[in-house]
Length: 245
Image 1 (tube, rainbow, N blue to C red):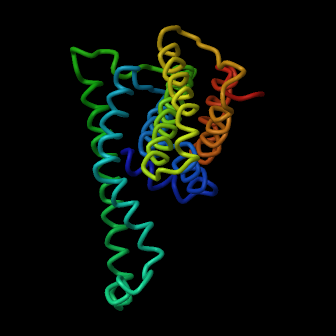
Image 2 (cartoon, helix red, strand yellow; image 1 turned 90 degrees about the horizontal axis):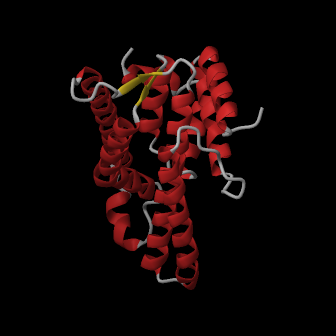
Image 3 (cartoon, one colour; image 1 turned 60 degrees about the vertical axis):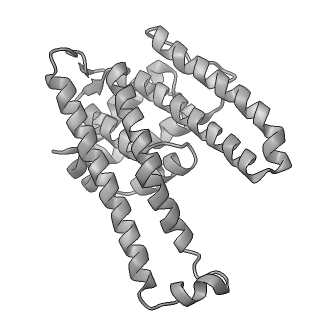
């Protein structure tokens, strides 16, 4: 089964869409990267740290340049017409069809991203120069450590985005919170680096509860994908300290 077929079959299942949207909107996740990792986990395979970072870096760039702007436009168009300036255009009968076209373009962009992710995975698996691009991962402990890194990465990106929004708005809240959020980003970066420096890092008790919340959402998605995958992933997350028993 291709990554795209896996995603299309999984997304309509009970609770999956809500969990994915929460991970995207509240935790900053790129859902396509998440689905790629889950697709590999179902095969008991896991990208190496190097491959995962490449998948994320290329996906971040694609989301910034294409998916993000299309999504922002589609979301903004929900509230049109707004005011006299746009009314003459957005009140036209075919405006709803135009928004559907933007939505279709966004979905097409996400499909291209998934095709690209699958290509990168297959290329890494076949590369003689990178024999450890994919790791056999029967216990899913490697997945758990990759997940820890992903949570830290997207949490850092989300905090950075909040700082930029505060500066752009020029609000007092944005300015006063900037230093505190920047300190959080530096802490997240340190945690992210340390998670790659040792084999079995532990979650510090004073960190944000985001890892546990995000992990529970992922488990909801995994449960709908395959009960056996859910059970194995839950055991791995408990052992890695990401969730409680």
